Length: 138
Image (cartoon, rainbow, N blue to C red; front, side, top):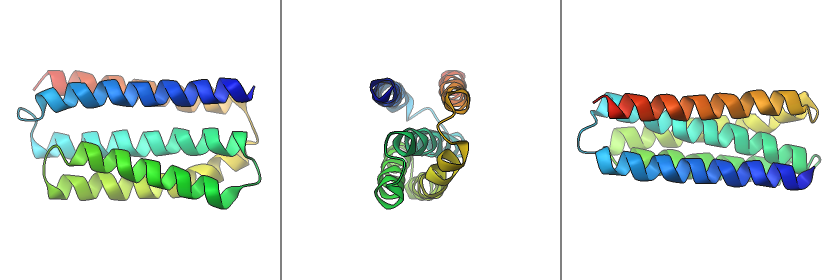
């Protein structure tokens, strides 16, 4: 079961990487309002799913899991935000921070529910599809 969680985490990293490359190519065409939303969605949902996966794999290591999820969310939100301007960078950073802080708590309450993890992953995938479609229409 643990290998399935790491596989999901790896797939999440690949999805974020693909969206990152696509958004990077379109960054000059995207306005700062959409850029801010993109950085918040990418950083926030990546931190959320990462925190849930980490707390499922390491159930009693709340502090390291929270720190890891928070740093990952802040990094992804900052990277996406840095494509646009400093205000967007700060929005992605802060949303990744907040989602990373609360995701292990949500995952601990879910008590290793694969249904909840599947729901969170579907939301993550759907949000990235929405980001891609909104960036393409600009």
